Length: 428
Image (cartoon, rainbow, N blue to C red; front, top):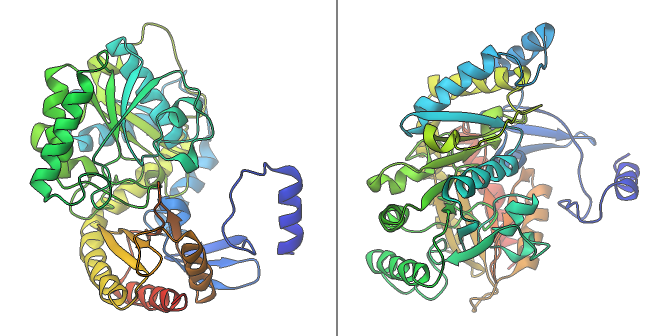
């Protein structure tokens, strides 16, 4: 059955539509932190549909909300008043930390970042964007144009002029040997120098923790230092929270809060986990920025009632059950468990991350060179052991990505760590 489905997939879908595993699997259902495939195999899910199943598979509170809303009305568009959309917007605006916030809902993180770029370039009347090296912001034409990761950038054509800044990767690059304070100072000097060579940019867009890039991050405070430089020149700061938002990092509700000494971002984008699998993305911005467009706009599917009902139920569950705190506690123990295991495996260069957003960077033993073949092998071995994980990385890097639902229990964390340790050992 699976091979027949794979053949049909290949005959009708694009060649560039990536699939995991030599024998791709079809996930048919899930419950809690586990999923099952079409062959009846059970897996502990440490990737959550690319960080999208944020609370749990088949969470009763979310499925009930979706079912009840579907029985009333599924969709009407933004041309009509929409109570669930307004209610979720009110909660997101309050949680965002942005003063006088306005919220616009989209259907994906890509579309959210597209909207943020539209707002920033219109508000600033500039098409120059600062972005981070090793970054990823989506698959649309404009989002690809600011993505600093060659593996996910199929064209150099862009409506934007993009300039790439140092700092998103702490342990590689020209400043890797510096201490944290000197690293930040060097990146700020680089930013200042860059700004002296270009027309005023519209904004800096940055992921607090780079997702597709392999869960890399700068020292806490880097973007706060950047913001001081940007603010002096009127340049906006866009925090791409598509993967880091909603408490996943454990220490903070938003990733930007690790860099919040100079205040919140001007624009915040979100998606993935808030819908727990339903298609929700969005943008939060100060009213003067959000309202800078001088023509009409709507969203046909952004903010539709059924996805908003899911988002409200999911966010309520997350807050009432302190899943941010759970990510901090369980994620901290999982990080230490993986670091202990990795210390005995020569091919592991680094175990990094925070909360339930952890990366394991792999290299050829005895070198500092990426080992993508090892990453693929570990992915296969983990699956054989009953664990689903992700992978990523940018320029000359290769990393495994670990991002379970935020309701992960300690026994499940230990189960997953043991499977992953065995998978890592299998490549020695």
